[in-house]
Image (cartoon, rainbow, N blue to C red; front, side, top):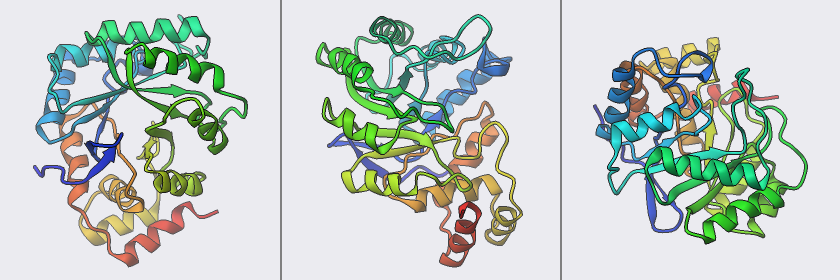
Length: 287
């Protein structure tokens, strides 16, 4: 298995491997309850670190609580080089829906829940999740982001990020506290944030595409399939390699509950896509 050589200067002098791991799928169906095979979930988390991954993306509303508790069970005490990025701004209702949770009390409760389930006194990075995947809110985020900035000043959070946001909301948040990462929906087929990605790169802000492989239904494209065949890779490896070459500030967080798929995904770091292949792939997301 290859180690991961690509790094990004995240939050100044902190260098993250650009290939991370998204832990959302370490749950039961519908991102609810425990996974069918708890031992396999623990094995995937430990293998991720063994492969050189030092960036895990998660949230306490996965399960709820399940994934963060498994991360603690598998990896605590955490290696010093490991960065855990969690999200707040939603909660899980008994009907398994994802209602917003952006009030001061809800955000404060969520931070303390994360700390308790991880067994930590300070969270490495907290993303404020704002809008929906296809419909970012256009309203002010000063109040909820200010709550997190206050918790940061109390030593509960080291770094702040944003998820499902617009460029205007990033600018607004930066007037309150530094932002180290933006996590938005982005992949070969979903390129609405092309300009936003470039703007983040210019500021040294990490851009973290969620659903880098399309989402719960993987990307389906004859062009992607053909390009993958030409370079002797799987379509998913090819889609991940395209993201790594797209911009130097992209950090990947593909998720899986399978050791085999985890190992296959990581091999994307060793793929170099020739310019002709990149040009073909670029056409997938053109308007």
